[in-house]
Length: 279
Image 1 (cartoon, rainbow, N blue to C red):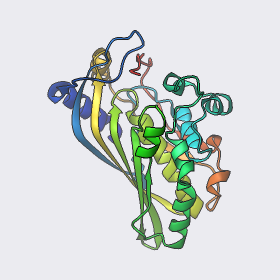
Image 2 (cartoon, rainbow, N blue to C red; image 1 turned 180 degrees about the horizontal axis):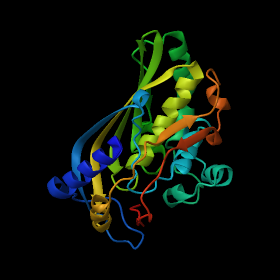
Image 3 (tube, helix red, strand yellow; image 1 turned 180 degrees about the vertical axis):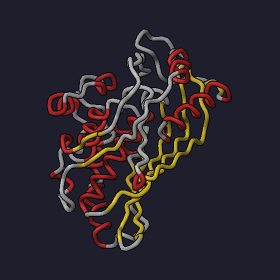
Image 4 (cartoon, helix red, strand yellow; image 1 turned 90 degrees about the horizontal axis):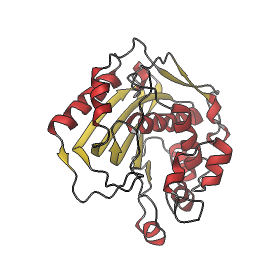
């Protein structure tokens, strides 16, 4: 059983047993019904990537390839263009959040990265002084929210710090989410931001350190309770998954590609579960 499996089961049990019901819920299911949920607040997890602790469950298959492609769309392409996501990466799950007939998700995510030139600024200040305490990616932009409709970013803030241990520099990362769908998106979001952390570490030739994961509102939708019980019944597989970025140290951030990533020693419990998403 991986550390992620332990945390996954603990969170599911806590939400089902101690969670409270959402009120005035915004999301809807595709049939138009209100998507209510049970939730807890203030969920935190820590993974030491340098010791092989990766935030991916074995209790169901996690589509890590699509998740990593989304990170490239946001932080390399710096785009909110759905046609680019569909055509270049063959990822379509964001299409349900298209704003009007714009073929975009509004001024969100990659559009904010581009607007503020976030990645170039982040890499520049890490190069000039890795020990500075201002390495923050923030996608929370009220001006952009007022300018267009669209889903407000769930994973909205990432922070980076370095540590020198026995002469080696380790890069740590902290991901903060305002909201997270425990059964569907939890490990997708965690693993894709570990991938971003790996890209920045490779850019500088640093080692992977720790990944800290804070979620303000962690929830399970009311149409997922059967799946939640099924996940609690499942026994995890005996594997230790690792994500590998197959590029040399010092490779430029913008030269990396999704196919450079490889998930090894990952054996998940099947069959996959079906989830009707809340939009």
